[in-house]
Amino acid sequence: MRSSHASLRRVRKIAEFQFGRGSGDALFPEECTFQYSTSQRIRYVILDGVRLATVRAQDGRLTLSYDGAARLHAFLAPPTGRVVVHEEAVPFVAAGKTAMAKHVINADPNIRAEDEVFVVAEDDSLLATGMANLSGSEMLEFKYGGAVKVRQGRDKQ
Image (cartoon, rainbow, N blue to C red; front, side, top):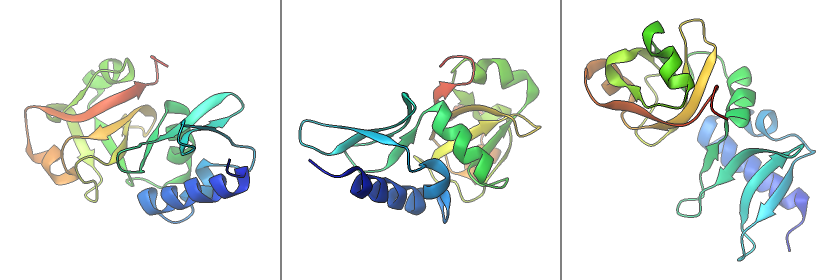
């Protein structure tokens, strides 16, 4: 079995790669605990009984829970990783529904399809976390289809 210190170092490095410098420490404090798969790979990162992130088995990248996204959202300056949606879409996205391209007002131009992103309201309040279906520029150009597949919304945790 792995030591918690080695596991913490590993998930912090993944976060640094995926979200940028400093994000590993911001997302995962020293008090994090881990759940492992049957093959002893890190599966879940937990803080005070709440899941912050899951390490995807297929590619080793992190998927964030709403709580993990909230920690990272507070650390990263706008527009990093953000998809801003129109006011009329806020209740739907916060409830965990897909953020549609026609409702996207702004998006980080560095977003690539399949990146983990934050869906925010115009005032930068966090509504949901999910996976981008489109790049940041495509979200602004397209007027149909899903821009972000919401994994967890603020009102549906």
